[in-house]
Amino acid sequence: MSKLKILVAGLVPDEGLVELKRDFAVDHQPDASRAWILKHLGEYDGLLLASTRADRELIDAGKKLKIITTFGVGYDHVDVDYARECGIIVTNCPISVRIPTAEMALTLMLATVRRLHFYDQAMWQGEWVNVSRPVNMGTSMQGKTLGVYGMGRIGAAVARFGRMLGMRVIYHNRHRDEGGPAGDCPGGGRQPDFLPA
Image 1 (spheres, rainbow, N blue to C red):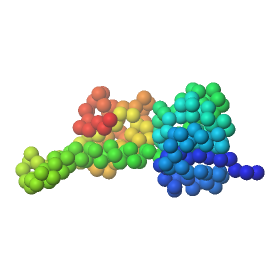
Image 2: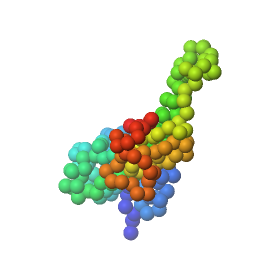
Image 3: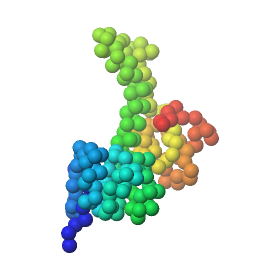
Image 4: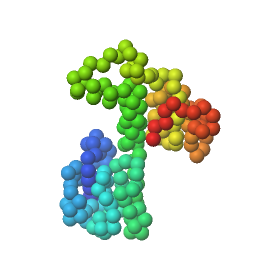
């Protein structure tokens, strides 16, 4: 029996396709244009897409599609209701963006408190900043309070990074996270020094 054919459209790391290739005939097209996808999608049983919009036109082009998977958490670029009407399952890959998103949140917080933009601009203008002056020092995240709004996979990763830096973590979630960090919910007690969006 021949393997089901999966089209991977977009910049998906090859190492992320190893397991998929064991069970399916995978065609990875990182640079595929929308026009190319529309022309060839009818040959495939499954579609893993990164940023291409899976609207009615694209879904209709996938005559054999059984599943559409997004490389990431969101479904905002997939017409989920129409796909379901057509009997197509829609899934996502939330783990693929969990750590990179948490790392970016941490990077932006560190860049802000350590005033990296200020130093970068000064150096490009040929200025040498006197870092011994308190106004130029920035601040430390250690001992500060990190507020996490939504203790899902990404929020929990941000909280872990914050605790590694010696921060106190408080959070707000629809449900109390028994296994998560202790603390008051933002707005309910101690206010956070940092609340990444």
